[in-house]
Image 1 (cartoon, one colour):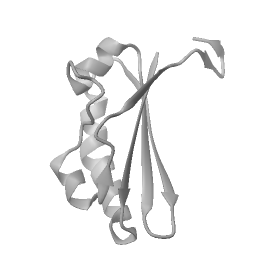
Image 2 (image 1 turned 180 degrees about the horizontal axis):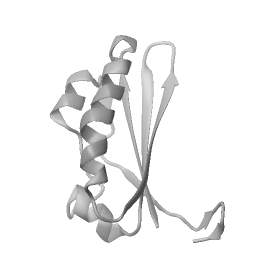
Image 3 (image 1 turned 90 degrees about the vertical axis):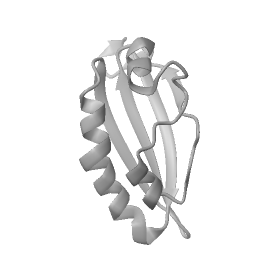
Image 4 (image 1 turned 60 degrees about the vertical axis):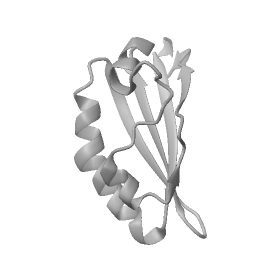
Amino acid sequence: MIARMWRGWTEHRNADAYEQVFSAIVLPELEAVAGLNDTYLFRRELPDEVEFVALTIFESLSAVRDFAGEDYETAVISPEAKQVLKRFEERATHYEIVIAKNGRV
């Protein structure tokens, strides 16, 4: 299994709007990808901005490529998300999941 991690930042006034974009647009697109196991969105309030971390769990790199394309490290950002994010990582990071709560993967 593969964990895909990506980060974006927004102004405090746009944080709720980004959550709505993620929920209404990003999540349905992710749920349509075969091989997606789970999705998490983390939010961290900072003094001057709000940081979001999206963590998606895929069955394989092949499933990640089905979502992100052949250059699977390229961030997939909807136009709506770009409107409310101040900045974001252009590349996602991927990790092989080797141990989960139920033991080895």
